[in-house]
Length: 216
Image (cartoon, rainbow, N blue to C red; front, side, top):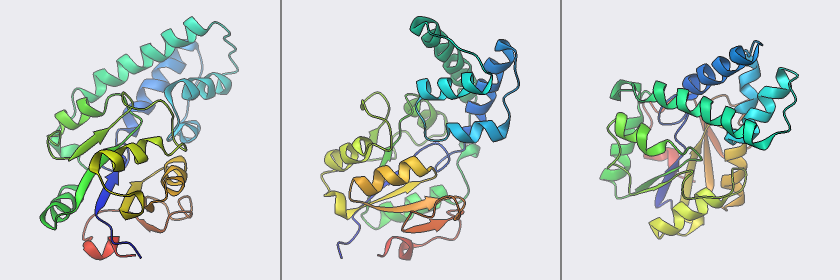
């Protein structure tokens, strides 16, 4: 069994909880379009690209828009609101135990990377003070295929110069777990074990975790 030499972290829902800001921005758009968008509806958007998220939102509101330019304008409007929200983030929004676990990995010579579809990754990392912490950051500006395509994780492994089978991914979304599996990597789910059952292991928090977590 190959020893884990690198850990790749999704950002939203793993390092920080930006899901609430996505939800607030999508709900604001739904209100502008004249319908309610609930937290339950929002579950469908986890780990999904921006344009696909818009399609789901429109279907919830029974709104049909064929004009691609109009759709792009709506997605852009949502993103501007989201950026407005995240630009007020602070270090206090790093999820419990994350900083300690990252330090533990670094102290033991394990490389760390971010593998996120978000185009706002660097803004968020800057706001929470972790921008220079990661060896590699692969975000939505560097990839063309969304999860469950493994591109984001394979690119991270490539830039880290570590073979995929020696990488372990931390993910909170089903699409991300599938992407990690397709990349040939170990994957640890962060969240509900009933939802993330395809992961090799599942944790609900990084608090109190040690290196045994990445022993396979």
